[in-house]
Length: 221
Image (cartoon, rainbow, N blue to C red; front, side):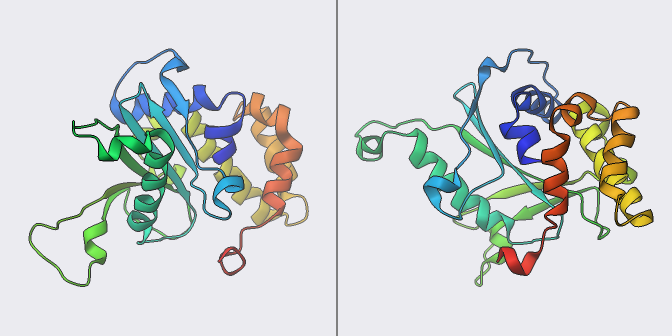
């Protein structure tokens, strides 16, 4: 997900399609996009998945999750704070005149195996020990279930995300039948059926390595 929407040579085109689907816009030029992802080399183990500055006015943060995590609003708060530090002149914080900053938007794309609703809203205020009617600090994350069988409408309006979802479903289907060759068969199947074909033809070995490096929550923590 990170490579496809943030690092690959086609990442900006893929993300622009995703942005258009989220906002019902029709931008054609990736010139409005500036990749501002936090790099692990700078922030050690603290790095977000995908983030772009859009036309110098909006920051879009997109996280990918294969497990349910209700603490994402707090993580997004940490991410966006560091991103503001990255794009803003430190002197601006002490200026006598109001300094405008890009508006942030937060999205989580979930494709785990646990069943959840198609769309959910996660709020930072839900984690506060003391609850008030109007919290003094709020951050809202839109969570979208992008499993292909969930039929999320965004998959119909964003071809790259749809193909990514189909790819994940194909990997699960093949690996359930053949544990030894499932990943390889899934990649071949997707190429034959025009699912991420160009991307997989270029990066099949890298994708295989990513799939083989099976995610383990405890190890990550």
